[in-house]
Image 1 (cartoon, protein in one colour):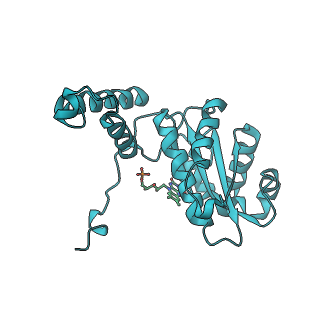
Image 2 (cartoon, rainbow, N blue to C red):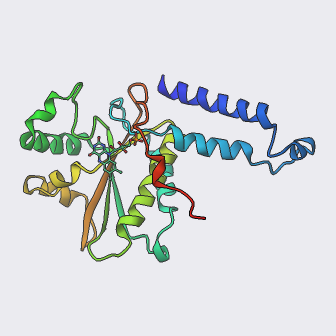
Image 3 (cartoon, rainbow, N blue to C red):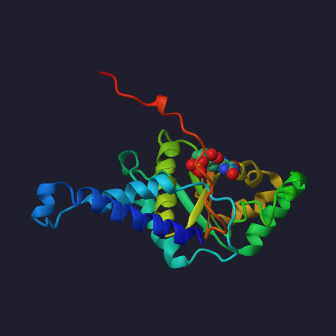
Length: 219
Ligand SMILES: Cc1cc2nc3c(=O)[nH]c(=O)nc-3n(C[C@H](O)[C@H](O)[C@H](O)COP(=O)(O)O)c2cc1C
């Protein structure tokens, strides 16, 4: 339903853009310019503006071909000196997700009180774990860009996502050591963030308020 809404919004955006300006400019429209970028621009902006953190998912894991494309988009993110200071591991194994969930519930029994609680990853069936080198001046930044590329490309395919900082202390706890080891991270790397992925189970939440006063030109 949400995917349909998203597709409908895209359609409206495309039709709206075409109706309002026809193409990049009237001149461009008259010439039926083949390099018109209006649709591309509105699709990218629409994708960015409609992405929300999704916190409830269908049980079906993300299709692995789609996840491969999402990962490819992630690794094509910019990184300082192209050092790609990160490592990504994707997990859709139910025993892993359920095992970490059991540990999290042991540590935080109130988790089970969340509506429709199924797992500790906001009910996501697929989770990407992103690690960065312990010694890196750009790891946090590089991994953030990687993460956003992954989330936005996922959203363009109707796949929801949510950054999960709360997962990290649990994964680093003694009880979760077998799961951390299973991630097979390179020596000298630590987990930076987990990202939930999955097909949204409901409507996208409204965007939390943003503070536009934080960014402005200096003349
Ligand atoms: C580094 C980071 C950690 C986050 N950790 C969590 C988390 O543990 N649980 C959660 O539900 N959302 C988490 N979020 C999602 C934010 O709450 C969300 O991005 C923010 O409220 C803005 O909402 P939006 O993503 O829908 O635009 C995290 C986001 C970031 C960037």
